[in-house]
Length: 174
Ligand SMILES: Cc1cc2nc3c(=O)[nH]c(=O)nc-3n(C[C@H](O)[C@H](O)[C@H](O)COP(=O)(O)O)c2cc1C
Image (tube, rainbow, N blue to C red; front, side):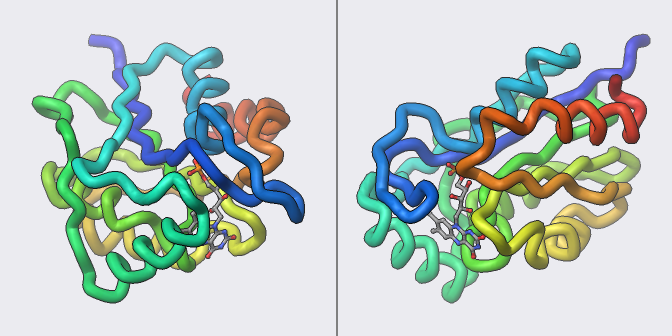
């Protein structure tokens, strides 16, 4: 059977900070990068969507996400994949929120058994890189093989094709 890959991602559209200015966007940075990946390799995609999404207003979202991190919340997701059994590789993509991944990604990770699966973390951010997200993924997905992640500057997401290609090929997916 062919090895199967799942691109599981969290991404927020609406107001965000781009090189010193606030802008409203229809598609979030992480989702843009996931689109590039889906163009390059055969994979299924799953978008993590919160039942109570963060505010479209950037400054409000910042506070809401900080609160969720501080309280170690598990924001409820609108849906979940039925199973991840068919996948041997999961590309887990998310923005850096306060130095790690959004808590909705933790909700996702805790839902499944990742033992024996390979996780490729991808984190868009504005300077903090992967933060502690790789370590945190290992904590919430025990038994998974967590590869070295790819950090992408969020505001440059549309230009990430080269580094994404390299990373996929380093990991045997391209
Ligand atoms: C709640 C929140 C917290 C953030 N915290 C950080 C941070 O700690 N470090 C960083 O470099 N960027 C931070 N950012 C910027 C985002 O990581 C960046 O804009 C990312 O590309 C957004 O991805 P998205 O458009 O897919 O949601 C933060 C953004 C938000 C909304």
